[in-house]
Every structure is written in C-alpha cells, then in structure tokens.
Length: 218
Image (cartoon, rainbow, N blue to C red; front, side):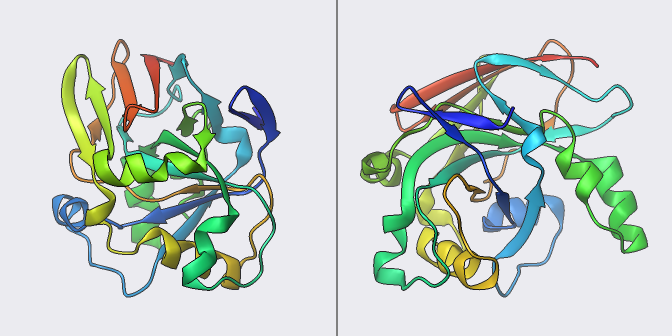
C-alpha cells in the first residue's frame, strides 16, 4: 500500500524513515552499541501494511522479529528545524511494527552490506490508523504497548528514548529533508521477539488508537 489513514482521510505515504537503537534496554537485549547520533535507515513504502490486517511473513524467512514503535506522520516539508518548533511538522501519530528478519540482518552486517532485505520486505512496516498530533501529550504520559497472543510483551515510554522526537526530526530535516507524507518510526523498547504463523498482535497507542495483526505464513 502507498497510503495511510489520518482521521479517516487517506494520505499518500512518502519516505519511511526508521530510527534504530533508541532505547537503552533494547540495545542491551541485542548486545549492540549505543549510537552517538540517531541511527537512520529506510524502508520502501511498498512494505507498508495498515491494520487491522493479516500479516504475511516472507516464505523464506525463519526469524522475523516484531518491534513496536511510535510512528510519526509528517504534514509539511522542512529542510531545517529548530528543536523548539520541530514538532510543528507532525500531522499524525500511530503505533506500528518495524519487522526485522534477524538472520538476513546478521548476514548483511557480517558482510558489511545494507539491511534492506532484512528490513524492507512486504508487510515489514505495519501501522495503525493515525490520529491527530494533538494526542502527543497523552502518548507522552501513557506510551504505547503490544500484547502478543493476549500477553503484554512490549511497553514503551517516550521518557526512555535516547534521542527525543525533536532531535530525531531535526536530524532528518537537516540530513535528508522531510516531506509531506513521510513516516518516521521512532525506535522500539525491550521485549522484541520472533513471530510465528497464528500469532495475534494487539497494539495500543495511549488509548488513542488500537489495531490488530494476525500472522500468517507466506
């Protein structure tokens, strides 16, 4: 898909920016190093899947991990931003899944190759519907969560981000330029794990929006 829903209105999706290693506990659980600046990677917009939906895993994938995240929808173009007004470019908020095939990712890292296949396969960028950006105060207070097969598996608080939203947006605007319709996945807390066919994922963003994905084999 190439569009997302904001308050019932269809918005064409543009670039998908993702921030890696933005929660210290997640860095520790994977044995990675803390980055000195926001770690940015991209997903193709053909990887988008808006819930509720069936989430089909790649047929040749053996270790797809879920990573629950706050997702920002950019409402206007920006090439430079100041921290005090960076959030003005945000039009909407969603809860999403940055899916990663760990085996493919590990192979790429060992050879010094890009992560694109591991991060950009079909259905690798899952999102709920978007709600207006004025829900951010509620998100700051209550965070986001994932229940896997009825059990709480991930719970994220923006207070635990290494790089706050303002710094992420300033970095993206400066280094790449932001455009209307861009999506920004802002990083995942600890609790990631592998998916198998039959899993049911229920995501919640501070009580403002919820969605559900049912996992199927490719």
